[in-house]
Amino acid sequence: MMIETDVLFSHLKEEDWLKRDAETILTHVSSGKLGEVRVSREVIHELYYLLARTGHRPADILSKVGALTRIANLSWVATTTDDDLLALSLITTYGLSSVFDSYHAAACLLQDPDHTMVSTDETYDKIPRIKRVDPRRLAEQIREEGRKGTRRTP
Image (cartoon, rainbow, N blue to C red; front, side, top):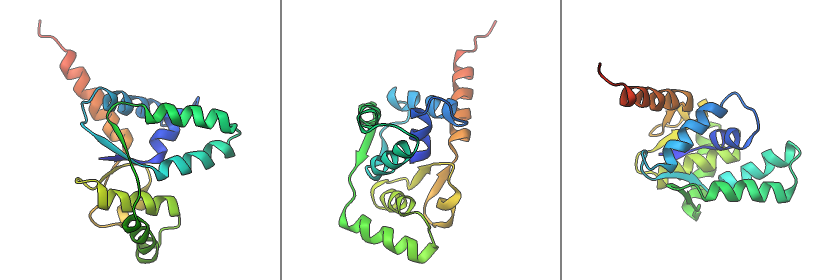
């Protein structure tokens, strides 16, 4: 399973419509309940641009992104030349408009055995072999499992 930028960006923001779900997922990741979860290192580049655009200073960006890299069970995967070429091919083949999305998709296809991307971005639905999981749905499943696990019979 890979987590895409939207979940991590929501986690870093003070307020966001996806923040509660991002927090639920990342808490579950850090506890090890989802196993090893991957993140393309291209997310760091994308987060830099997003955070800079929202007024964050470079030192703040370094601090925030550095904290993300220390989340337990979150594995940051480097891109390879194969990822680069596949990313360019995905842009051409599926008309992806974001180079970041194409890199995340390439990493998901080449480096994630499940080919599963946790993202709200429907762009990934265009690409065969990638299974997109909406983080809102995943977070709700996690919360529901928690409720079932904490219920006691009278």
